[in-house]
Length: 294
Length: 222
Image (cartoon, rainbow over all chains, first blue to last red; front, side, top):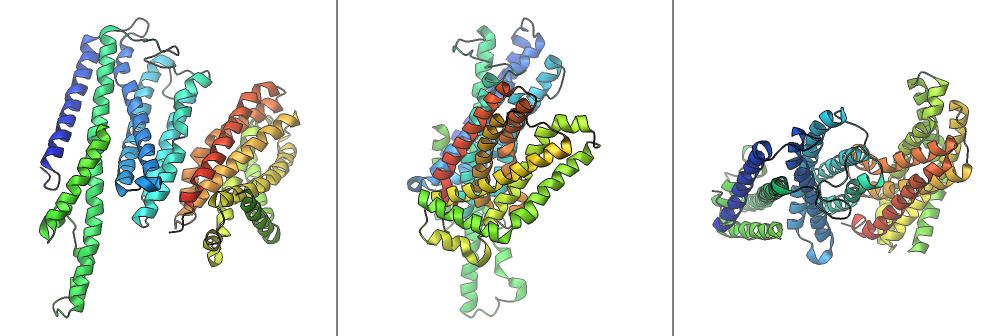
């Protein structure tokens, strides 16, 4: 177990991860062996249990990234935790957007006769992925943490404009892509029986998988931030010690900054104040778990 | 806010009038792009006339990229941008002013490029009302989204490479809608272009509104 994450938080996220894994396995089993082929679409309908849930998680991930970015931009709730959550969620959103495009393409080839077509839904999904790739690129541009967080948050909010356009594109334009998969425009269910339950399980399982990976990615981001800040603190302490006249320090080979905290776990366990750092990280991670749970 | 916007727009346009960067560099660049498209399509008149609206708006898009970069490059000398922000101007006013100045420059460029397209590609500019209406909405959208992203990228060392990555996907719907609206007009079916023109108006309204709201955080002095 990771020593700087509280035991309770680890157990909760572990349970979420396990449930997601079991749920996805059950979705695959039900989708491939138990559910019947559809009238008209035949066995191709089995992609129904993967493609819409993956697309839903893509929207959800970008929605969470935008909500967290808005929370960061709002002066009363401004906190680096929101920035980490936004970054983690956007990364997952890009992965799930790519998965949406790949699974859609696999479905499109036998149904439409082509891997790709310049359909409104496909085009806007590709644009959405590229927009958030730009967001991830701007996150990597160096700067003080709050400047990076602020400009990233603005880009995330601006990029989200494409999400409703993407969802509504199949209603606005005549497209090859079908309209809503689960509900028709009058909100009546279009899928029934075991197929509906399998689809529901797919939605729940992929959402849980997203939540689990999100928490793990958030933890890594928190560890990276603490490594950086701890590294700086240690470097300053060493320079102060040099100034105090320690003859063994200050040689070029003993330059302080590069030697500090290459391992986050070692950093948190090695020096004085490790306990308080661990408690600080744990409380932040608990906070993240509760955000995700909400 | 609006008086601040007027001040900033007048300042930017005055700088452009005096420096002549837009007329000496951006406009010739746009014409070069038009000529390159003709080379790429083997100088085939029917193909060029058919593709003219799309090629025209791609040339406008690239020029807009240069114009918005230029809009913030003029603020980098002598820390002029920081001076402007510290002078108490409303960030939303700065955004609106810069967007208005870019929109005016783009409008002039579009008129000249349209003449170039008519001459070089043999395109027929039919139904001017629809062309002007859709181009007007598209210009406001290009300028507002462009200025917003250029403001974000202005302080970055990698702005030249990052700005196109951030901005071009955002502007893709404008390119698509404007090209379709112009295509419908130029082929004598302006009625078909109305939904595209409406989409351009929605895009312009959304990005002007978002720009006014987020201008504060974007231009926050750090």
